[in-house]
Structure formats: structure tokens, C-alpha cells
Image (cartoon, rainbow, N blue to C red; front, top):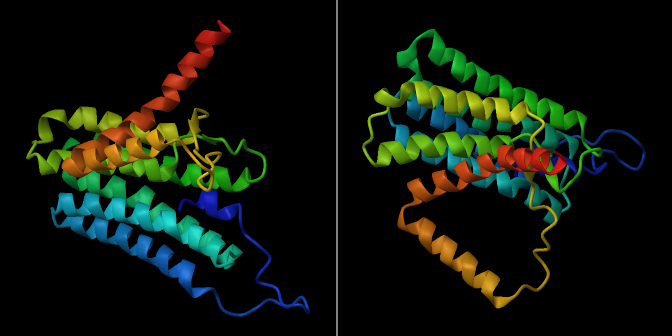
Length: 253
């Protein structure tokens, strides 16, 4: 999961009854965090070797593993301050550095200084996004994320690479548009635009049968063409923030 979700559940498990720090770390949740970190690193290496589809898939794998580590930590009562910090650093690699370098190797490098500037905006946006959230724990409305979450931004950028590569689309003619998209993702991460967090959904409660049927339908649709529908899903999510901002402004006018 992202650092936003894991950090809420940090418990003072690093202290012995005597008040002395406990040596060692919890293994299970940090194994998943390590897996997410490795996937992000692997995405960078694959991108450098021109294996862009593999690199994009690795980013999605990192997102899945990142979504599991915090949940497992809560289920096993093994949350810790170390785990939260480790998860934050892993997020920076997997959802900050990896998408930027993959897109730079894919097409942004052909734009020269403009290309690396667009990639840097994304990396800086991810770093500032994580740092800002860490300073706002306990104050923000849990129903919303302030700014585009870094895993969603990475999925939107990685999904674009995956979909274009899977369909043999030459990115060169669209290089400037891609640079604008990557830069926009970085800016959205540090914006004050609100994104629904889905944290108020009761997964343990009962729901109408039609809801489960719709979920099965969505999973089936995604399985038809994962590269296209996953990229579309996260692109739509990234667009909901600005659209919600415009709607709120329109209501106040």
C-alpha cells in the first residue's frame, strides 16, 4: 500500500516494557515492501534495456505489492515506524524515479533538455507529495487525498507506456504531448486538488448483489486488454481531481 495508508497504523511496537528500543525489524510486511522496491528498480533496468512493456508491468507489480505490505502489517499487528519510513523510500523509487526514467528512456530523451526537465518535474512532484503527506498525518480528511497519490500517478504514466508499447504505437510523434502528460502528473501530485481515497468504503459490510456483479464485470473487461483498460482506469482517476475542482468552483460561483 502507499505510505499514506500504512503510516496511520504505526504503533509503538519498537519499545520494550522497560522503555528501551527493541532491536530487529518485522520481516513479513517489509518483505512485501522490499518486493515493491525491487520491482521499481527492475522497471528502471528494463527501461534502460529498451524493454518498455516489461518495465511498465513492473511498475504495476510494485503498486500491488505496495498495496499489500501495510494491510499485512495491520492484520499481523506488525506495523512499525521503520516500516513506514522504508515504505516511503520504496514509494519514491517505485512511483517517483522509476516512471520518470522509464518514460525518459522511452521517448522523453529525444526531446533533449525539455525531456529531462519533464521527467524531473515528475520526480520532484513525487518527492514533495510524499514529504507533504508525512507532515500532514492526522490532520487531513481521510476521505480524500490532497494531490494525486504517487501510486496512481505512476500507474497513469506506466499505463501509457504499457498500452502504447503493446499496440506498437510509435511515441515519437507524440513526444511533446507525453512530456506534458508526465509533467502534469507531477504537478497534480503537489497540487491541492482532492482525490477520493475510497477509505470510507466498508469492505466488511454487506452490499447489494448488483455491486458484486459490477465488480466481476469490470475485472472481466480489464482482463480482455489489461494494458489499455488499466491505463484508461488510472487516467480517468487522475482526471477526476481537476474535474471535481472545477465542479466545486462552479457550485460556488
